[in-house]
Each structure stands twice: as structure tokens, then as C-alpha cells.
Length: 309
Length: 281
Image 1: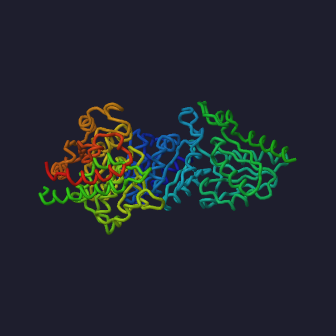
Image 2: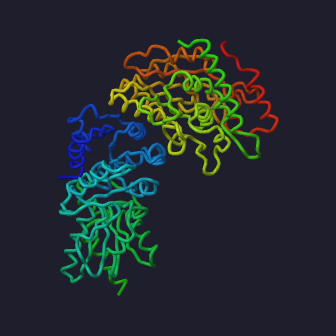
Image 3: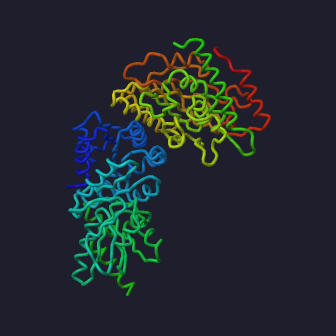
């Protein structure tokens, strides 16, 4: 199941119980899967047309009347196109608007750079009053959406376009916390989104070489609880972060801010190296072109291990 | 239909609001304020708050209230003046406008000022927010109205047209936009800076019912607000106004879009407001 299908279905399930939930889309509901809500509750579904700025401020207005609006588009558009609207209409007054950045990162591999967000985590987390979530799989997406609907305040959730392996089975979600999915003694990688399953693959590769890599899932980039991060990093000889996002300003930077505020610390950030995306014939080749593979993560760990030797 | 005594009352309130606006700007060195654009829409705002809208100063969150949004948020002083006169907060708060810790910020802030529904100031967003409120009201089958004041310079913002298009598409007949057509923006005449062309025609083309009025004729303002709504169409009231109205040195003067007053100008403004305000043309 893909995260975006979970988005559509979870909205329908939640919307059945909480009539305050309304959904706004900008002509991409067949992709974001907001279309499922349209079919179920057409009177609470608002097709806003290709007008993201209006969509965001209209969502603010709906929240003023007590509704719980979920607005979605491709993450480049739902975070970037209406940035001032999110800042001013939503975040300054801390209104209860939920923003979905769908097909985030490089996951829309065919459409190319204009449709690939490598900056959305950065620009969303720097807004006061905004919370930023980066689920690793479908189940986590469902848990976070539930939290979003039940808790007041502006929130942004970043979803991959493509099916992802299930990696968070049996887990809970609490905003701020990071979750160690695989223990490891030597190196630790904080990962989010698709990079979680990729980091787990890297850990398998490294185990064969006698290197144990701890893999920590970061589903909540903001808030980010310092104690949770310290505990997860405890004892690791080298620390890395991995995200399908620029190495500047995203989850890796957030983790680094927390760790380095505590003590001088070397952190190797893996991600998109300050470049825009591009088209590819498939998701795997695109990730490979941008160095976001299990082998690339493993190689980075090996390099870091050599550094600390 | 507004009775002469009601029109008289609105005019009286408008005059008081104009005095408050001048006082909030004051004449201290370095203090500036949006005199021009607050003065131009003052009669409309007075008619809304003291005649047309259902207001609840004792309970700003009252479910039956009408909603007022100042999309041209820089004219915050005119809204603060109205809210103070209605008793949403004590009059002496006006003396603390734009100071540290004040409940009256430089642009409307719903988290700090009782009676303010949304944060505006970044132009072009208020109509969208008003649309969202109008849509929410309709979902709940409520009869409350939403009034949004927009600047004519603000019409250059694309988002205004996104909202205009959407409001007509959603048949939001509980939404009324008022355009403060004072024809001057911060850096000069709109016709010279970015000509917005035929405003009435454009809004009609976007599917709105448009009424054009003299924005300083209180009877015309009330008649427009009272006029029968066209079913399934939002309404735009195009108010022809004068930037800096009733203050001779500020009238039609872009310098007073956001400017300071000397002591002489401050006193002159107060005395001119009293001398020149007419009740009904």
C-alpha cells in the first residue's frame, strides 16, 4: 500500500466519525487520493482548482468556523506555491490547518525537477507553530494522520508517491520521538521516509562485513525531542542522517542541531546534495543517481567508520 | 432601509473613528500610520459595524455574529477605531497601538485583538479567508454574512482573482466584498503604477453582482448593504472613495499612504474632520 492511498482512505475513515473534517484539493485529487473523500463525502470536499494560494487561505477560513481542513497537492506546490499563505494565514494565528505534501522528495520520478520537492522539510519546519511529519510507511502515515486530526494546530505531512516496505509494524507514534528500528553498536543512522527502508537494507549489507548499523526512524522532524535523539545516538561511534531531501535545512540538519547543541559531534548528512531533481524512467534509477541507495548509505558508513578509527 | 436617524448615527461614529485614527498616528517624531487608506474606507466600516453587521462585543466568538475581514490589513487603525467604539476593548488601548506587548498590532492579529477574525497584512489573502468562512457557514446551514474589505491596489494580487473565481464557482452568496477604490497606492496613482483597468467589468465577468457607490455617502452605503442579494452570486460593492478623505493635505496624496504628522498637521486634521464631515450628500 502506498502512503498516498493511506492518506485517501484514512481521511474517509476519520471523516465518517468526525464531521468537522473537510478536504481541499487543487486538481490533483486523483494523485493525492483525496478523490476517495470526494466520493464518500462530496459536500465536505472542495475542489479549489489549480489555485494553491487560495486553497491555503480558504482552508484557514474553514478552520475559523471550526472545521478541520486537510489540504493536499504535490509537496512542491502545497508547501512552496502557497508559502506566504501558510505562514501568514495559517501559522501566525496557529490555525488548525493540515497540509499534505504528496509525491514528496524525488518520488514523482517521471515529472522531473518542477514536481520534486527537496526543500519542503526545511521551509515548513522553520515556521513557528508548524509541526512537520515524515512517516516511513503506510501504517505510520495512518497513525500520524489520526494524530493530526485529533490535535489542534498547523501541521505538515510529507508522503511518498510510491509503495514502500512496511517497517513500523507494532509501533506507536508520539510527536517528537525518534524510534530505533534496528539496534547497532558502531554506527547510527537517523532516517526518514523512504530512506528508512533503504537504511535497513544498508544495515543488512554492513552486517555481512561485521559492522553493526543502528537504524533510527524520524517520523517527527518538528517537534523533535532532544532526549529521544540523545538516547537513540548513545554509544554510536559515528552518526549519519539520511533523507530524500536537500542536506541543507531538512531532517538531517534538525538532528544535527539537537546533537551539536549538546556536545561537539560529527554528523554525516546524506541526502540530495543541494541540487534539484530530474526525470528518470523509474524511482530506483533516480534514487541511485542522487546517491540515495542502500549501497551508498553503507559506503558512507564505511567512510565514517574509517574517520573515527 | 436606513432611517435618517440611523444615518446620522453612522456619520457620528465615523467622525469619532476618524479622530481615533489621527490620534493613533499622533505627531511624535518617527511615528507613522496608514492615514490615507484608513480614512478612505472609514464610512463603509462605520456602516458595517454600526448598522449592518451583527456584532457581539461582550462575546467576540458568538456563533451568530457576522464576520468582518480587513484584507487591506494596513488600514488596521480604522478597524481598531470601530472595535473600540463598540467596546470590544477599552478605548485607552488605542493609545498603545503598535507598541511592544500591545493587543493592537501593526496589522490585524486574531490572536491578540478581540473582534479580529484573521491575520491580514500580506495583501491578497483576506478574500480567500472570507471565502473559507463563508463555505464553513454554508456547511453548517448558518445565515451569518461575511464582509471583506479589499484595497484597489490590492487587486493586483493574483490570489484575489483566485478567490473571486472560486467564490462565484461555489455560489457564495453569503460573501460580500467591498473594494475601497481610492485610486492611489503607496507609490502613486494606481493608473500610473499598475493600472487595474475596469474593475466593475472584471468582477462582473468573474460572476459577481457588482454595485458601484460613492463610498462617502452613507445612505448609498446602507442601500448597497441592504440591497437584495442575488441568489447564488457573491456581491461586490465598488466604493469610490478618496484616500485621506476630509484631511486636506492627505486627500489623494500617496505620501500619506503611510506617513507621519507634524504637530500642525495633527491639529489641522482634527479640526478638518469636524468641519467638513457631511451627513448625507
